[in-house]
Length: 273
Ligand code: C2E
Ligand code: CA
Ligand code: CA
Ligand code: CA
Image (cartoon, rainbow, N blue to C red):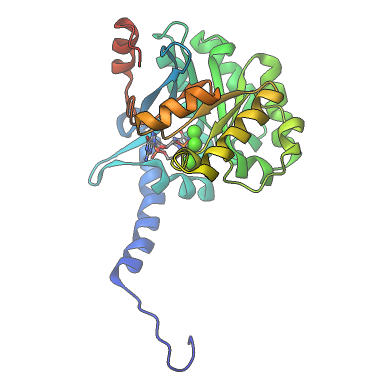
């Protein structure tokens, strides 16, 4: 079908992909029927560059699959978005994170949300309910939405984010620098924080990479935005980010995503980096 002198391999793994997708949808439904049994949130600590203290955590979803073990979100978030299951899934994540965060006085908890979830008509109401129900202060909750998702999304999403902000919930632009947004969006959209994508952190040892990150820091500070760098994996990256004025850091150098009880322990021990 691809034409003369050309061939395309159909490998068993492609076949498996299809099967995995089908299974994922059905199994995800089962997982959602009993969320607390199969879904887990891990939390990755976020630290201040000014004093090394623990300032927040990012909730990262894990699926304890009955046969496949721990599945990371990249393998099923898309499927959940396409099937519409993301709404229920996203609500579970928000509620679980809010409940867990009650045990961590003063700590900010960041939750990733899908634009499809934000667009569902009762999203801001749900957030309000979860805050009321859990007793979590709105100021301690932060919603992370990817740059690409935000730019592709409608003005409804922007309106929801504004409403959340009025409630005191902060909003972070995730994976900053990887999308196709025009910089003027930063000014127009109600975000409080920029998360510098890992791909930029990885190249700060090059002249061009360093210049890019410095430009992002300048842009953020000129607009009064907070900055977190993600995917920090070595000391040189950390030193550079602190030097140029990035406020917070997150990455394997400091801590991997861990179960909730370990966050409580880190707080007790006043863990610093
Ligand atoms: P993200 O929001 O950009 O999250 C950061 C990802 O980078 C996480 O992968 C984290 O484990 C990983 N990471 C953290 N530090 C390092 C590092 O130093 N080096 C490297 N190589 N990686 C690091 P994870 O947990 O697999 O999550 C993947 C993506 O899935 C997330 O990317 C986020 O977009 C999405 N996701 C996770 N949880 C949720 C959720 O509850 N809802 C939605 N809608 N999406 C979620
Ligand atoms: Ca994120
Ligand atoms: Ca990110
Ligand atoms: Ca990402």
